Image (cartoon, rainbow, N blue to C red; front, top):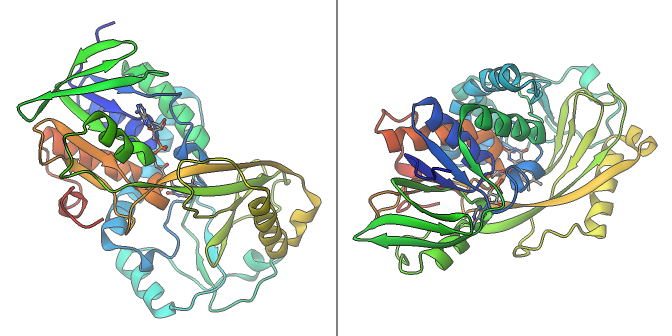
Length: 366
Ligand SMILES: Cc1cc2nc3c(=O)[nH]c(=O)nc-3n(C[C@H](O)[C@H](O)[C@H](O)COP(=O)(O)OP(=O)(O)OC[C@H]3O[C@@H](n4cnc5c(N)ncnc54)[C@H](O)[C@@H]3O)c2cc1C
């Protein structure tokens, strides 16, 4: 196997895989190294809502990537379906927010970003039990079925000839004169032209272990555990996403309804917790009492790549000429992924950037 590519990526979540695809589309040869199987970590565990929770309360740098990604999602999902036969189920079913304390901010944000906003129609609210406060209905907001998106993406990368090295353990990253020369793995050593680290919650730990001398500009990314569960409901039990405070329900096309989520600082422990299962169950069945009739078929946890302000690191490492980072997307990596992949590719290939790159540099506040 020829392991020398124009670009090598470490980490095969949504960020690594979409970046690999974007680079491949631009004509680069790409190798992606994943320590387990691609698309099984945070990107699998997430809900797939294509909007941050209350986006008007998020950093502008997050919303810039969100806005650019929203424009790309429908075509991305269509292309992946056509290329692989796997449907990522981009579903613009609308998002209902039941309690809004900062209505003016919400209204202004939606008009600035061109997001349709309405008073919720009665049909959307029926069957829900909650304390309504200035409810908002965003009829054009959607979700994606992220496990299927990842499956389609993996198949597409294979079809395109991207070298996917799964179950591949990296034992060393070797540099000389501010340049990454070589990566050693249990599948062999190979030379590096450009290296991108997209290892999600593991990025900081990976750099501390494998690039111990690069102490100065190490991204500050921490694991933030999130738990969810899924009810095996029937289609049309719920026809839109519903958000109350920081919890939400997401209806998939086949009737399954996801309830999420938590944000817990518990290190790299991914064990689902029975108490949280009960909390999520109570939240979901209180909000949508019809859910009491359906079984919970799965409860899981994922590790988000947390950053202090939720702003990802996307850019070149200031201390190496051929090292870049694309990681730290915290709670909104699925929605920010298409624009993040494009920005990373713009920077590597010196194309005009899709959004202003400064807020995502390693030296900026995250
Ligand atoms: C419960 C929950 C709900 C969420 N809901 C949403 C949502 O509704 N909308 C939204 O936009 N986002 C959501 N998110 C956030 C989103 O899932 C993440 O921001 C996103 O998946 C991060 O993608 P990633 O590729 O950086 O990380 P990951 O998907 O975690 O991928 C990182 C990859 O790097 C690999 N790796 C690590 N170390 C190494 C190494 N040494 N060598 C090789 N490979 C390595 C890992 O095995 C992994 O496959 C949610 C997350 C959770 C947990």
